[in-house]
Length: 596
Figure 1: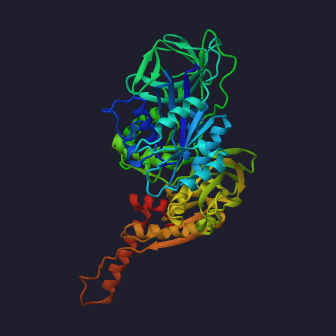
Figure 2 (figure 1 turned 90 degrees about the vertical axis):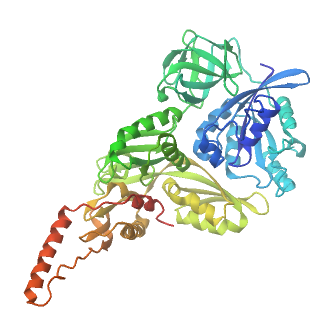
Figure 3 (figure 1 turned 90 degrees about the horizontal axis):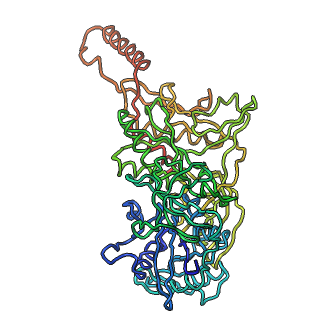
């Protein structure tokens, strides 16, 4: 145990975390030159293209310092806010963390939020200033920011470059000298924390764990405490670039277990593994079920592909247990699924993976959050879909989730960002100058306002300089209404939304105008209406295509023309009653960008 070091890397997106991890693998000879590629630990094409880590990874390295061989377990974490629960479990499996800050960008919002997570778990922080080779690097300025943030000395900060390999030896030396070995009792009953799981199509679900007390051997009978399931450990081992089977994993080490699990919901991140015959008296603290924050409908473009979509979603869930879905049907779009996501990035990634890995083209409805509706009859109900909201007559009040938003930006954009947040019903809570020109703003705002287009707008008004992070706080009562969109008095359930009453008129008008542009003309008049309950608040009309039925009447009596026009009028009236308006897919997509 004395020679084991467990550490993770925390950083904001694009601060060079994956590149630095590559250099560590190269210097410790964990990966041969032939196998080494950029972002070695990111095995999805999507991760490489976007330059972000979606799924966290773990890998074991060996390093010799002063004649002693040390085992270093790197537990890589996703940097994005949507996956903060995964990050917190990975951090709980470590004793130390490398805090990586880009020397040209300085400290960003997610750096701070993940740092607080690490400090909550009493991790030793090793600050690293990365990308020192860049011409735009500002080492002195960024060094002062790091010293202010974690109250360290100048000599504690390691200057490095993932690209050139500068400073990597110093990082490894710092991990061995500063990070304490894991604490634990090898004689106690087995207690191991699951911090991640992956799906293998041949072996089922593989759980990654860290042994806190005791040891786990091959063929042991084990139990997962929170799911109360029992299994036999068919194989245990350590995580090199590929899995390496071992007869036993001892206290303080990190490994994997294969026990033929086929259901994604049987393995939960944060669960505790123990022996059936000699269980531990208490589970590892901090376990929680991951709660989806954003809900949206996913429908196949061709309704015949529904079963294929179901299979694709089930396979995706094996790889990503935080995806929640259930079947639903819509009058406008046919059969599909109501899906719960951790956030907007998570939703985008799932949509893209469906298209790439399974060749499914899907329509996504307007994303929304879950609300709690209290009826006058005294019942409460959770509303994940606008169509589930009871009739306004029966509602007493509705509560919506609020978040704590943290924005770090340059001082020149403060006014514009404050304006944006106020427009999104935000309440300014705090404003702190981190340096002479970098400001941290703290807002409380409704989650529903953030899921739509907030992040895109924040990036555009700050020219990409603002970094954003959030965490949910509580549900609060708000004046919310359900806005229905109707075509010829038939509601289109896929376009309905729950919205604040003050914004309903403006939003309803915009959607009606947008649909008027996008829906092709028919041979009858189409009325597009936005309504709250029985009250219509906005209306646009698409005029009918006019066929000139009197073209063949030249000369003769006027009554002949009148007769033909009357016949046309009656036909149009009948058509309006039985005719169906096809909504193009572009209309559903355009609603997502309604405020641009």
